Image (cartoon, rainbow, N blue to C red):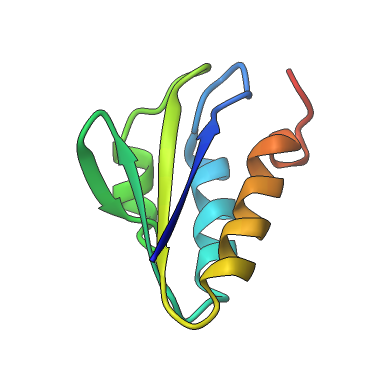
Length: 90
């Protein structure tokens, strides 16, 4: 099991389209992937759970992956957050 910390850099926060993009990416991996915000942990492969976190601009999140492809999963997810989900640093 491995974990990374990321920050929501999109001005509109983790809105529904971004939550969908995140779920699309996490679903590619066999590892169990969870997002933790202020102690609340949700399944990163569930769009309703991710959107329900209410992660606004600047929110710090931890992403935990556990499985055979956990390194690749975390690398891909870090890249998504670092690039603002291709929306740029709005």
